[in-house]
Length: 85
Image (cartoon, rainbow, N blue to C red; front, side, top):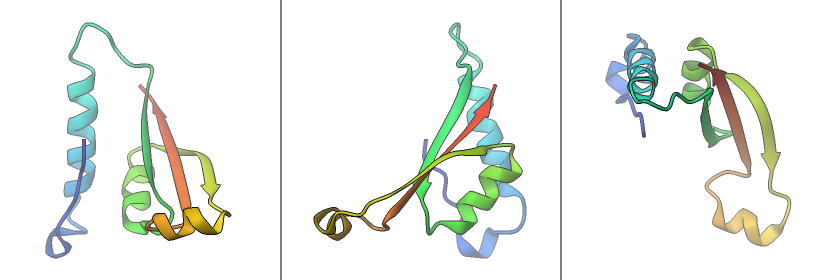
């Protein structure tokens, strides 16, 4: 799933509701996942705030150091967050 809140609608709690809706959808099937995982770019502070408000915890931060990789990525740090379900 991909969640995006337009700038004029930020701060209204919409992203949190969308995140919870996606989690609820994942829990409706026969096979229930043990956790939800999100990966985002390290410079996406708004998304990081939204996910941590919903109970996600940072599991890992990885930074690209290779000069060639840095030219391919939108940001040099990837953040992985998880939430037990």
